[in-house]
Image (cartoon, rainbow, N blue to C red; front, side):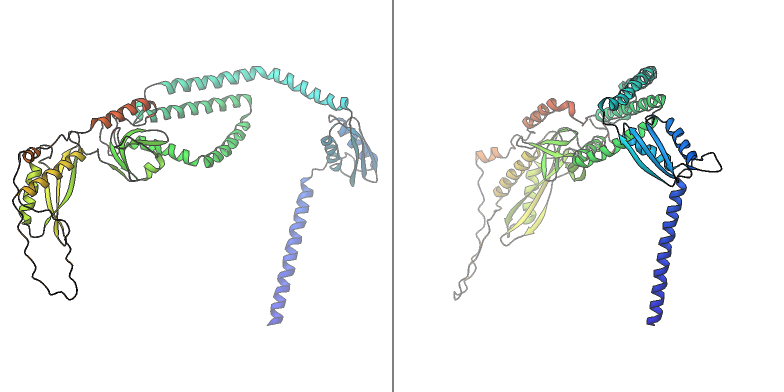
Length: 456
């Protein structure tokens, strides 16, 4: 078994060596094949023919007039002077490609004279200058044509129709106009480069722009994310100006939606700035979308109370208020039974356009409490009974019935609800802030919301 394993291993080893050698020979053959062969134009190749062929080729190349060749037994020696190191490398490459050359020995020196090195540079600059002058008419035509295309794009983008009709708000309309300008600008550049015959340059520019854009995108990822979220929010319009909303635990009136953040004002007049990426990914509670809003509160009564009468008394107190809507009607139920009381829940609906939600809830709680107390319902505090070890159990004393309260003139006046109209001061502050930031506000009061309903 060991002999078989050793034989297999030896076979694999020699097979691997054979494959590597074959690959190397193929690579060498391909490398040799890639080198072009320059024919010496003679059936008998000798040193004189090689010398003559190389010198004729070098004579046709710029900067090689001071290079001469010596050939001996197929070994080529290059001597002389050149102004640039690249010319010496070019001469070596030419000599190596001539048929019959065995090897090339480089003895070319680079000229260090300042005058001789600057003359070729000056000649090249002079030639390029005159080439540029001859290129001016074609360049002018390319610039004019590209400019005309770009001006057409500016004219199309400046039109009101169809961009305002296609977009849900002004922000999207402006974004469409910018895209149109960019498309016409790129088209003008492409057309100009095509006239100049330099369309290959456009690929280089776009490739470099793509790399730079990718790097910038990673660097300002949060900014780009907020900008894209602002576009989506401006299209969906999940809230309107002055709506009272809740986002990520923050509550406030909507001031504006910018390209970076959503700005709220809380009930205390403080500004809350939430990044649009957070707004777009969060659960948004809009308390103003439905003008009818239900409030609720809890009141505890004594355990021995008549619960049916307590519920009816509280409901009558709620129904009697003008600010509480009769449809949907107020409601009440038992929430829980505690050690010393029973917790009742009362609810009612208000129209937020006419009534302050907070004030309505507060006034209904006050008037319901007064009604329960006036009808003899006690609102007890928690009671704890302490029994000492060894004490004789005593008879549980009966609770005294709650005395019927007399209604004074002041209490009768309290039966009437106080002013529960919405607080306009905070709305005025919001409108003032909106007037200062209206230029960059992406919200619109006359657009279709995300449910397809017309707002405003």
